[in-house]
Image (cartoon, rainbow, N blue to C red):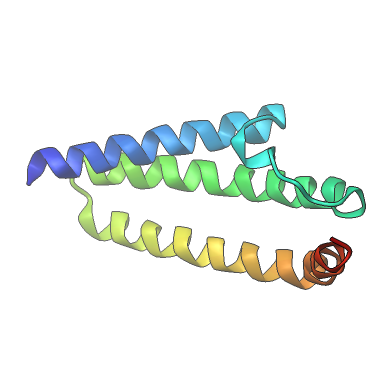
Length: 106
């Protein structure tokens, strides 16, 4: 069980590093999407802001999990999940209508 926890912690750290890389460079898999031109720039700015917050929290969660701070790790997992939900709500409030209109044109 301990090796699974260490693997999960390492996975969290890797994702956190990748999120910070994507936030810093503005490149990565998260930016490869087929949004309409009217949405793309704003959506990428929102994503970049989200990644600047998400990356360090996930890095901290992975470190806490690895070093055995279970309670803090669980709290940070809750923060990560809440952050993802907030991002999705903001994204769909801002761009949901434009994305629906773009799909009806097909």
